[in-house]
Image (tube, rainbow, N blue to C red; front, top):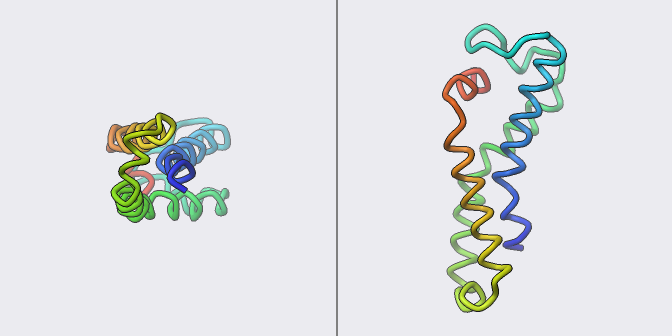
Amino acid sequence: MVRALALWPAASLSALALESVTFRVVRGRWPLPNQDDPKLQGFLMLHPLTQVLIVSVPAVFVLMVFLVGRQWRLFLSERAYRLAVGVFALGLASLALIPDQIWEWFWD
């Protein structure tokens, strides 16, 4: 379960990037905050999916901490388990490094 949850932030980041690139392909320019509402751009199914993925990241973080804390011996002994936790942490860091303009456009 931890290995599957480890990809959650990366999936959220990928969905956000896919939505931005889809806007770029459809409109011919990058989205601008307070001008281009992603909910009204014609790719309606992608936006709710991306929102669900991003909004659920804190809950997945809590679940991940709980699971790792509960299975701490496995975390200390198995390299693949530590790698999954590292992938999760890298995904969270990547989400934190997204420029404010993209977040402003997305949550507009």
